[in-house]
Image (cartoon, rainbow, N blue to C red; front, top):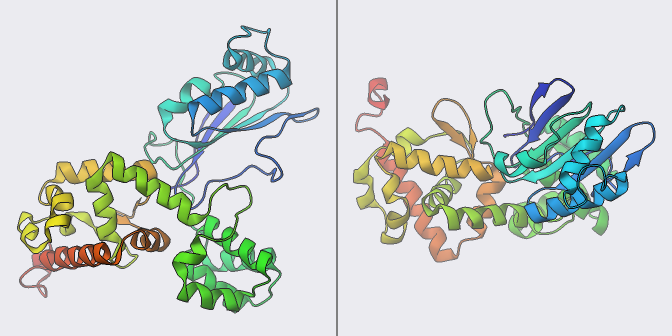
Length: 344
């Protein structure tokens, strides 16, 4: 999973977190933003998805710092930057859920003895500035569930952690649901296996405004608007095993179009046999992180992304996309599958 990333520069550090591993949160759970600490300096979290909201937050911080008259009362961003540049103590500012690098650049303090933390779903950041945060190891995830819920059954907690794919947001949401309803881990595991889509839309994760289903659903909806072929590719991948997939093999042959239904062919047909079009689709996907690189030419879709993608489809549409996935896999199998050279 794409995740933590960073680049250090004199007097500051740039970090970002991306992906369905769940955006990182600062260590102050009680508020979306903190304030001025006498010994620690400034610690502030900015909701950064909407530039207008982000700019307004700078006005609030400028007032807290008494910075409106430092540079220009009409420019709270410049005023805050000036105060932070002169501050002797350390400071931390967090830009949460940044849509892209260019969106946040004008707001990042250019100087000072502090640190900047950027969280984002967008994977398009220069090499060396990013550090991936993987999903949690099953044992670590099980320990979290035991600690968070107070249910000591570690065996069941591990099974549930595997079902949730180690996704931190999903783990927190599940734990919140169990705590709120008094449900045991064993009962929740049975419910999840039977009503996965329903439970992904229930439970409130601390510090996160939306559940897993809504968070992923919003990203997929935006992807549908911006790049229909990329959204179609996610639907195809949703009906494959949650393992690394070679897109070079899956999308290799234009002749596979004849095996697709008219609706699915219209969407993903342009990707077949065209590495440039396929590359454009992957570029679009990485803006919202529904897929992760998994090696040379391989991509991986998290099992919960797959589940939510399938749940958003009608029964008829699900059948069409499942048939498309099957057809593309069958077309990718060489005529002599037992010969290793045939797969090259």
